[in-house]
Amino acid sequence: MKKHPEITAVLSTLVFSVALGFFSVEILGEYGILVFLFIPFLIGFLPPFLVGHYKPLNRSTAFKISFITLFASIIALLVFAMEGIICIAMASPILVLLTLLGSYIAYGVHKRKYTDNPENYTVLLLLGAIITMGFDYVNDRPTLIPVRTTVEVNAPIETVWNNVVTFSKIEEPTDWIFKTGISYPTDATIEGEGVGSIRYCNFTTGSFVEPITTWDEPNLLQFDVIDQPIPMNEWNPFWEVHPPHLDGYFQSQKGQFRLESLSANKTLLEGTTWYYVDIQPEIYWKTWSDFIIHRIHNRVLDHIKKESETTLFK
Image (cartoon, rainbow, N blue to C red; front, top):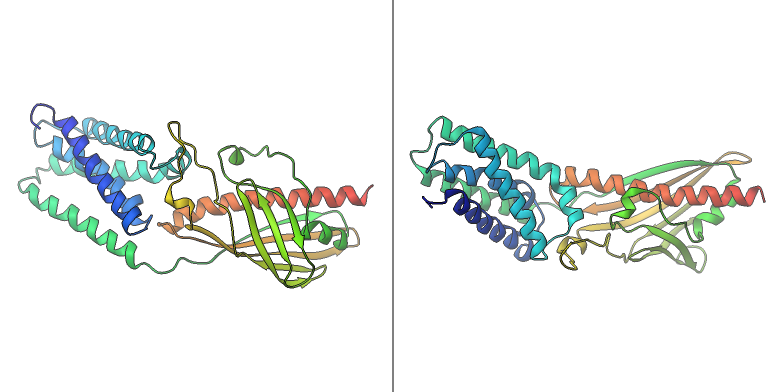
C-alpha cells in the first residue's frame, strides 16, 4: 500500500463495491439504495480516504482518485458483461453527484484530521452497507404510476376510434431516444371485439398482450397487461448483455385510450399507461420512465392522428 497507495485504494474499492453490488442484485434481487446511492458514495469516499493515510491529500487529488475509481468501475461493469451503456448513462447523474459527495467528505475528514481511528470509519461503512441492504430488502411494493398524454385530432371520434383499436405499421422513428435500444411500438392488432378480446401492441422487442376490460365505443378503451417484452436491448461495446433489470423491474399493469368529441371533426385523444418501476430511488427512475413512456405515447398518438386525418381527407 505504501509504494502505490492510489492503485491499492482503487482496487480495494472495486472489489468491495463489486461484492456489494453482486450481493444486492444477484442474492437479494434488488436494484436499490445500496446500488445507486451507497456504492457511488463509497467509490467517492474510500479511495481518497485510504490514500490520505499515506501521502498528503488535497481536494484536487481526492476528486481525481475518486473519479478514476468510478471510471474503472464502469469499465469493469462493461468488460465483465454486468451492464450496458444505456443504463450506465441513465444512472450517470446520481453516480457523479454521489461520487463527488463521497470524495469531498473524505477530503474534509483528512483536512480536519479526523483520522485517528480509521477502524471507526470501517465500522460505519459496513453499517451503512447493512442498513441500505436491509432497507432495500424490506421496502414496500412500488407505487402504481400513471402517465397521460393527449393530442387533438382533426377527425370525427368514430374515425379516431377505429385507428385506436388497431393501427397500421408506424414509420421508423426519428426520435433520438429510440436510437439507443429503447423498445418502441410498431403496430397493433386485435383478436375479437368487445370486452374479453385480446389486443397486441407490438414493439421492437416483442408484444404487449392486452385483454380488453372496457369497450365503450367510441369513448373509452381499457385493457390490462398480462405479458410484456423486455423494455430495451442493452448495448455493450464488448459483449451481448442481458442485465437482470430488464426482467420484471419495469412492469406495465394496464392502459387506456379515452376519446372526447370536441366538434364534428375534432377529437381529443388521451392515452394513459399505469406501471411499476421496482428500482430505487423511485423518484429518480420514475423521471426517466415517465419521459420514455411519454415518447412512446407520442409515437402512437401522432400515428393515430395522422391516419385518422388522412382517412378523413381521402
